[in-house]
Length: 194
Image (tube, rainbow, N blue to C red):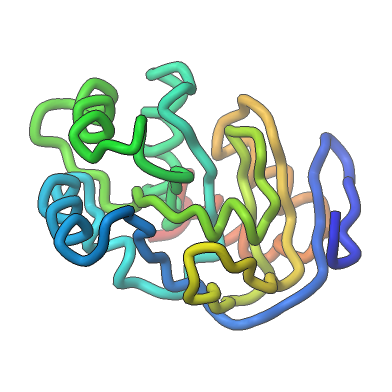
């Protein structure tokens, strides 16, 4: 891994480079008109609340190829913990296909406020397999281009089909750069903190 990262216990990857804060954005094909159309269609899944916020330090990387139950649990747990779930891009390049697939995972009319699309996060943390969980030590800025790669702060990373609680507990007890943040988000998830 670039940036001096290393793999720790249980496949936990730690990286050391960059700083700033996350401001998630949508990399839709076809310009502003298509981007606005996508926002309207995906709005019930919380796209507007995720992408306007900054400072996300708990990021779960997902794909609609994951088993529906595992994806739903990830989306529920990560958002309850105060993190975000990101997808690399639109399924089959279509907002309609993506919203239909997410609709099968979610209940009727259910909102997911912490779900979005951002290929820059996949590039920044060099995520090529999902599910994956990342907790950063500090906030950071994402680069503004669609094909750019952002510098990232020190972070912990865990790949594999594990729960958000397991990933956060592993980070919190592992003593890595994201341990303190992971402990705070774990407390939110388990109800030990509002």
